[in-house]
Length: 164
Ligand code: NI
Image (cartoon, rainbow, N blue to C red; front, side, top):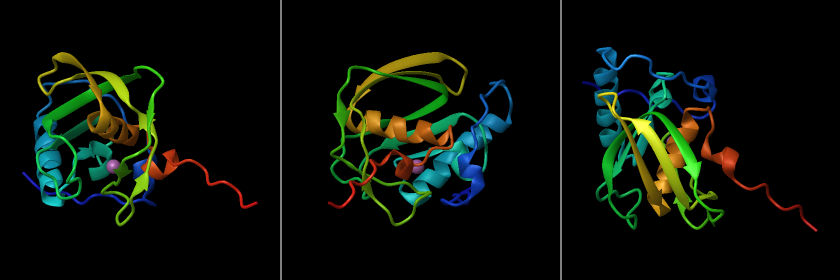
Protein backbone atom coordinates (compact mmCIF):
# COMPACT_ATOMS: atom_id res chain seq x y z
CA UNK A 1 0.00 0.00 0.00
CA UNK A 2 2.12 2.89 1.19
CA UNK A 3 5.02 4.05 3.25
CA UNK A 4 3.57 6.69 5.53
CA UNK A 5 5.23 9.61 7.28
CA UNK A 6 6.18 8.81 10.88
CA UNK A 7 5.25 11.55 13.37
CA UNK A 8 8.09 12.78 15.54
CA UNK A 9 8.25 13.93 19.15
CA UNK A 10 6.66 17.33 19.61
CA UNK A 11 3.66 16.40 17.45
CA UNK A 12 0.61 16.42 19.74
CA UNK A 13 -0.92 13.45 17.89
CA UNK A 14 1.73 11.23 19.49
CA UNK A 15 0.29 12.15 22.89
CA UNK A 16 -3.30 11.00 22.31
CA UNK A 17 -4.85 7.96 23.95
CA UNK A 18 -5.89 5.81 21.00
CA UNK A 19 -9.30 4.18 20.65
CA UNK A 20 -9.94 0.42 20.52
CA UNK A 21 -10.73 -1.20 17.18
CA UNK A 22 -14.46 -1.93 17.16
CA UNK A 23 -14.98 -3.73 13.85
CA UNK A 24 -12.63 -6.35 12.44
CA UNK A 25 -14.49 -6.43 9.10
CA UNK A 26 -13.73 -2.76 8.38
CA UNK A 27 -11.74 -2.67 5.10
CA UNK A 28 -9.68 0.17 6.56
CA UNK A 29 -8.08 -2.33 8.97
CA UNK A 30 -6.12 -4.46 6.44
CA UNK A 31 -5.10 -1.25 4.66
CA UNK A 32 -3.77 0.16 7.95
CA UNK A 33 -1.85 -3.06 8.67
CA UNK A 34 -0.23 -3.01 5.24
CA UNK A 35 0.78 0.64 5.71
CA UNK A 36 2.29 -0.24 9.10
CA UNK A 37 4.20 -3.17 7.54
CA UNK A 38 5.45 -1.08 4.62
CA UNK A 39 6.48 1.83 6.83
CA UNK A 40 8.23 -0.43 9.35
CA UNK A 41 10.16 -2.17 6.55
CA UNK A 42 11.16 1.11 4.90
CA UNK A 43 12.49 2.54 8.16
CA UNK A 44 14.15 -0.62 9.59
CA UNK A 45 11.91 -0.38 12.64
CA UNK A 46 11.48 -3.29 15.05
CA UNK A 47 7.94 -2.14 15.66
CA UNK A 48 5.44 0.54 14.83
CA UNK A 49 2.20 1.71 16.40
CA UNK A 50 -0.74 3.11 14.44
CA UNK A 51 -0.65 6.53 16.15
CA UNK A 52 2.89 6.99 14.82
CA UNK A 53 1.39 7.15 11.32
CA UNK A 54 -1.44 9.42 12.49
CA UNK A 55 -4.08 6.71 13.02
CA UNK A 56 -5.35 6.89 16.63
CA UNK A 57 -6.31 3.21 16.97
CA UNK A 58 -5.00 0.54 19.36
CA UNK A 59 -2.99 -1.38 16.76
CA UNK A 60 0.72 -2.22 16.82
CA UNK A 61 3.01 -4.35 14.69
CA UNK A 62 6.46 -5.64 15.52
CA UNK A 63 8.90 -8.26 14.42
CA UNK A 64 12.60 -8.76 14.05
CA UNK A 65 14.71 -10.82 11.73
CA UNK A 66 18.14 -9.31 11.43
CA UNK A 67 17.80 -5.64 12.16
CA UNK A 68 20.74 -3.26 11.79
CA UNK A 69 19.16 -1.01 14.43
CA UNK A 70 19.22 -3.95 16.93
CA UNK A 71 22.05 -6.24 15.76
CA UNK A 72 22.20 -8.35 18.95
CA UNK A 73 18.52 -9.02 19.54
CA UNK A 74 16.99 -12.48 19.07
CA UNK A 75 14.45 -12.85 16.24
CA UNK A 76 10.78 -12.12 16.95
CA UNK A 77 8.03 -13.38 14.64
CA UNK A 78 6.02 -10.67 12.90
CA UNK A 79 3.09 -9.98 15.17
CA UNK A 80 0.07 -7.71 14.99
CA UNK A 81 -1.62 -6.77 18.26
CA UNK A 82 -5.05 -5.19 18.22
CA UNK A 83 -6.51 -3.85 21.48
CA UNK A 84 -3.59 -5.35 23.47
CA UNK A 85 -3.54 -5.79 27.24
CA UNK A 86 -0.25 -6.27 29.07
CA UNK A 87 0.35 -7.82 32.46
CA UNK A 88 3.85 -7.78 33.96
CA UNK A 89 4.98 -11.12 35.41
CA UNK A 90 7.14 -10.86 38.50
CA UNK A 91 9.00 -7.86 39.77
CA UNK A 92 12.10 -8.09 37.67
CA UNK A 93 13.15 -4.96 35.80
CA UNK A 94 15.46 -5.02 32.80
CA UNK A 95 17.35 -1.79 32.30
CA UNK A 96 20.29 -3.01 30.29
CA UNK A 97 19.15 -2.56 26.68
CA UNK A 98 19.38 0.48 24.50
CA UNK A 99 16.05 1.56 23.15
CA UNK A 100 15.20 3.81 20.24
CA UNK A 101 12.06 4.99 18.51
CA UNK A 102 11.32 6.13 14.97
CA UNK A 103 9.38 9.01 16.53
CA UNK A 104 12.41 10.11 18.58
CA UNK A 105 15.02 10.24 15.82
CA UNK A 106 18.68 10.23 16.74
CA UNK A 107 18.21 9.27 20.39
CA UNK A 108 18.86 6.04 22.29
CA UNK A 109 18.48 5.43 26.00
CA UNK A 110 18.64 2.72 28.63
CA UNK A 111 14.97 2.42 29.54
CA UNK A 112 13.76 0.26 32.43
CA UNK A 113 11.07 -2.25 31.40
CA UNK A 114 9.42 -5.29 32.95
CA UNK A 115 11.54 -8.30 32.06
CA UNK A 116 8.67 -10.81 31.81
CA UNK A 117 5.26 -10.10 30.44
CA UNK A 118 1.99 -11.77 29.56
CA UNK A 119 -0.01 -10.15 26.81
CA UNK A 120 -3.32 -10.78 25.18
CA UNK A 121 -4.69 -9.16 22.06
CA UNK A 122 -6.73 -9.79 18.93
CA UNK A 123 -5.17 -10.79 15.63
CA UNK A 124 -6.19 -9.14 12.32
CA UNK A 125 -9.07 -11.61 11.92
CA UNK A 126 -10.44 -10.69 15.33
CA UNK A 127 -9.31 -13.89 17.08
CA UNK A 128 -8.00 -13.48 20.63
CA UNK A 129 -4.56 -14.85 21.44
CA UNK A 130 -2.03 -14.56 24.22
CA UNK A 131 1.70 -14.98 24.80
CA UNK A 132 4.19 -14.99 27.60
CA UNK A 133 7.47 -13.32 26.66
CA UNK A 134 10.65 -11.92 28.15
CA UNK A 135 13.69 -9.87 27.32
CA UNK A 136 13.78 -7.91 24.09
CA UNK A 137 10.40 -9.24 22.95
CA UNK A 138 8.81 -8.00 26.18
CA UNK A 139 10.61 -4.67 25.76
CA UNK A 140 9.32 -4.16 22.23
CA UNK A 141 5.74 -4.92 23.28
CA UNK A 142 5.92 -2.46 26.19
CA UNK A 143 7.45 0.22 23.96
CA UNK A 144 4.87 -0.18 21.17
CA UNK A 145 1.87 -0.39 23.48
CA UNK A 146 3.03 2.76 25.30
CA UNK A 147 2.42 4.60 22.01
CA UNK A 148 -1.28 3.70 22.31
CA UNK A 149 -1.44 5.74 25.51
CA UNK A 150 0.59 8.66 24.22
CA UNK A 151 3.76 7.62 26.08
CA UNK A 152 7.22 7.91 24.49
CA UNK A 153 10.39 6.28 25.82
CA UNK A 154 11.92 9.49 27.23
CA UNK A 155 8.92 9.54 29.62
CA UNK A 156 10.13 6.19 31.01
CA UNK A 157 13.71 7.25 31.64
CA UNK A 158 14.64 7.51 35.29
CA UNK A 159 15.06 11.04 36.55
CA UNK A 160 18.67 12.12 36.84
CA UNK A 161 20.24 12.35 40.25
CA UNK A 162 20.94 15.84 41.49
CA UNK A 163 24.54 16.91 41.67
CA UNK A 164 25.95 16.78 45.14
NI1 NI B 1 8.43 3.96 19.27
